[in-house]
Length: 239
Image 1: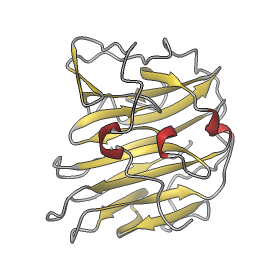
Image 2 (image 1 turned 180 degrees about the vertical axis):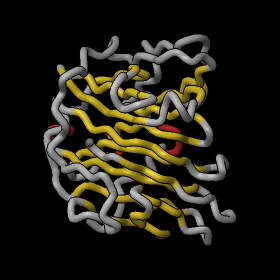
Image 3 (image 1 turned 180 degrees about the horizontal axis):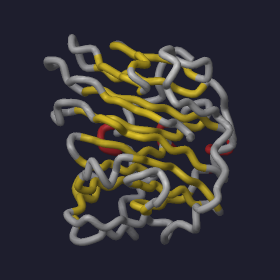
Image 4 (image 1 turned 120 degrees about the vertical axis):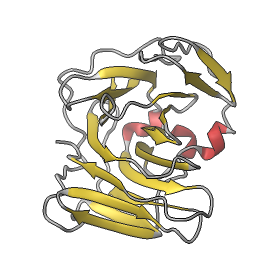
């Protein structure tokens, strides 16, 4: 692998042709550039009609990492400009302050992502909400940008993206500390948790067929040249 899979937003899904029909948001929401922006604290369900139960799903077979040994583990491929570092028990991703850049780590192993779950603890977001994001992403192998599925912090919002639609919800650093992507029975569910134990479904989309073989990515970055945007911290991947 020579680099990361994506700029996860793909310019706010400019290539999406299916729109956002069937999406509901917890309180009120508006459709803008193929994105629904939610104003409520409730979850949202996607055009698949909602996801099935994700309890009891096994972890996806791409490895796990508690980021406690002070070095990027052998399960990862690090990519992008900036600093990748394990420090004080977390993964620290610091985008290059010189220019517009993303960086991250991608699992070396591939796995069937259609009947399993991956979670991560988002300990800290970037210090600037201007054109920045931090996320966990499922990608087919080889990458198919139209089939990326991700959940993360995007310009101060909780951004949830499926293969054919996306939503933004108000971000809560406590309630959304843990992020999970879980796939079962043809549906991929994007979930959040305050503690890594009790999960709330925020979005559900049809699982792309290409996810029969894929990788997982953790990443952070900025879309424009600007002063330092700080560092994002992850912990407890697939634990």
